[in-house]
Image 1 (tube, rainbow, N blue to C red):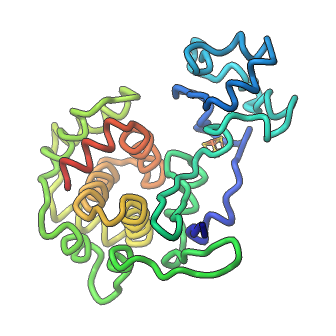
Image 2 (image 1 turned 90 degrees about the vertical axis):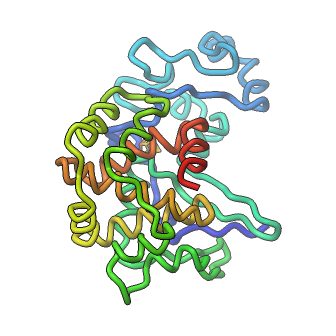
Length: 269
Ligand code: SF4
């Protein structure tokens, strides 16, 4: 089946040892069956696996992640030896009847930089160079006839939680890093007004429109969820966070927990 990806994916290269927030630490790395079979011939690799996952070190780093942040498995055996999750991260795929819509997830700092920093609405391009029109629910967010805050209101059907309630909803989910909770507590203790949110969104139109477009594309038009996520990031930027970095943290906390993303999509469905 033909696979379409946002055009910025063509520029994606893992930053490897230059990555500040490596994805090879702080996660559970589950290994697919085929890779487990392959690894079973290698006693050294087997000694670092338990219950189908790599045994992370006490500091949360993968046992194959060297001190210089390069992967020992790639260096010794090549990239093809990796298990699926390590080969594929941060890519995602949505399969439709006749095509696949793929992309790169924002938990990766390089993906976040590329997706949020794109100067134009992304194009969906297949490997053979053919282009698919953006879904109408994505196009809406790039409509220049209205300010972005108005477009977001349309996309969410006019529904909008106040900032304290919204931050409380996200804080009630499974938290990976207590720092995320502290950031949300700042909004709960001292909420941000809709006016402040809208001003922040309009002042940073490129990044917020790209973020909303990414969410609409990845979650197949989940408008209310996309808008509430943008409002939350706008609140955190009002509180002093950098847009790209806090969007990455949001993605790690909300998108990369199956429980949290299901809850967020259901709550803001
Ligand atoms: S987070 Fe992204 S850039 Fe960093 S190591 Fe992982 S895939 Fe590479």
